[in-house]
Image (cartoon, rainbow, N blue to C red; front, top):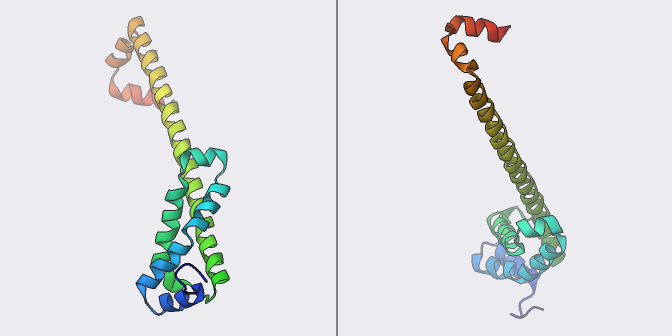
Length: 147
């Protein structure tokens, strides 16, 4: 029995019958479990980018939204279902975090490339090379570029 005196299996049945309040109380019972799971599963690199509470919130929202897809009827089946949602959300968050880091790396690389090309243009202008290129007919520039 849990603190309310109502067994989880009873809450599961009530939630499956459409009782949204029972569903909310049911999912609330597992917030601490999900939080501890998040704390234990977030590695050092992810821990600085992801907050366990945010992950628990995402899992709870998805579980509430998709509860009609839960086909179990017992507490162990519910815990397994919540854990699958948790694992899927953790994997999604890890992919997004890695993608964001790659994008930041690309932005830095593009900025460096832009800086280098700007320097090259300024040097070419200083040497007078660009003025000769700018005077060429557009068709000739096109032919030279195509080689």
